Image (cartoon, rainbow, N blue to C red; front, side, top):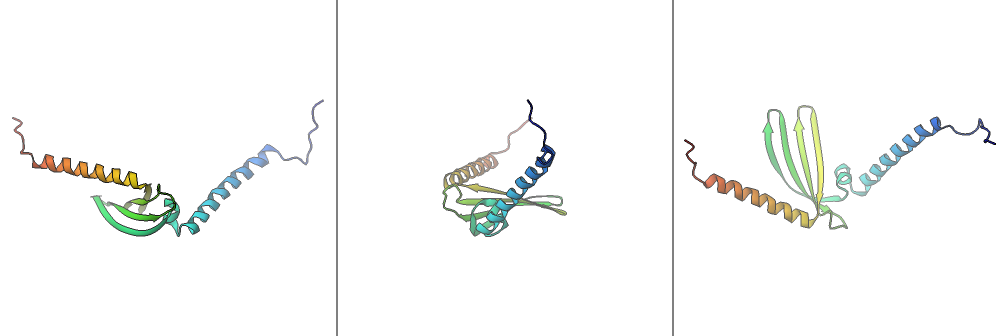
Length: 133
């Protein structure tokens, strides 16, 4: 014999909005917790407190867009979050920030790759132009 349908039971249509709201509230709550734990918006995005901003390198400019990279020293218990790179793109009425955290090993690898790219560019610039004709 099938179970009788009770009118005081919750329908699935009532449950979906409640689950959506609960998930949304959980995500917002986690971000607010990280905001206060790591000392602000950028700290929350990096997942560690920014102890020092070491500098900024400006990228290329294209018409009304500017780009830059900021380097931050992060205070974290984990060695996986030692350095923070903040990639910034600014334009007319727009601002985009993309954070990346690097471990000490990854930071050293990035330094090595940047030096290699610079050395290759310098060695190509030092070569005399070849005759193509």
